[in-house]
Image 1 (spheres, one colour):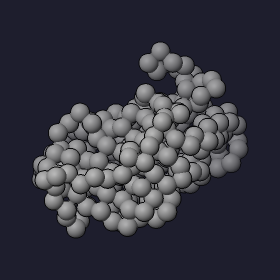
Image 2 (cartoon, one colour):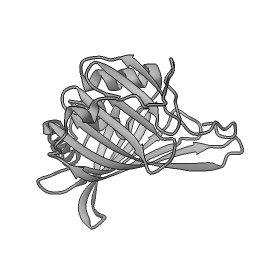
Image 3 (cartoon, rainbow, N blue to C red):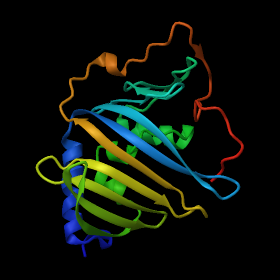
Image 4 (cartoon, one colour):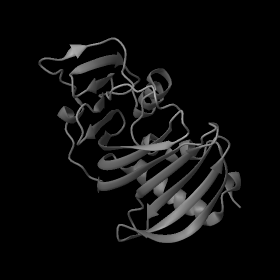
Length: 234
């Protein structure tokens, strides 16, 4: 076993993927996320959303929900971060750290917001992914959407997670699954990653927030743009 109880095969595959991701200076990817919530009755409900995420290292990030009315759009330009409810035009803007890593940390800790698969967007994703890992193994080689992938599984102190990585010279993650063990219901979050553009031609306008003509600036970042519900609670 290697570092943190990770098998040599899993270590090699994870290192190859994270080194490749860190080498990408600009990219765009589409994601389909499934977030499991548990109703007070105990029934589990899957909430699905689609997003497009654009990254330009070291200090630009945009993630926008697509296809549904009233989605969230997160924009970071190296100086400020903005969260907008595109359905009603409300938005909040805050000063931000000078790097993507710092912006993700601040968005998570202070505002409880995430980009889909945000752990994969850090400058050193291996360190983030393995921070609380206690063991890891290569499950085997499988096929996802006609592509051969390596299936890795990891156990951690607070979460267990699995990742499916495309085999070959472009070891891109295509599926990422996380189970939170610290909650009684152990909810699962999954994200499917597709339409990778590893050399995306991104311009400054991609990451420049432009307030909508009839928009309203608010002081507090919304956690969701969907109608509130009192039925769901993890």
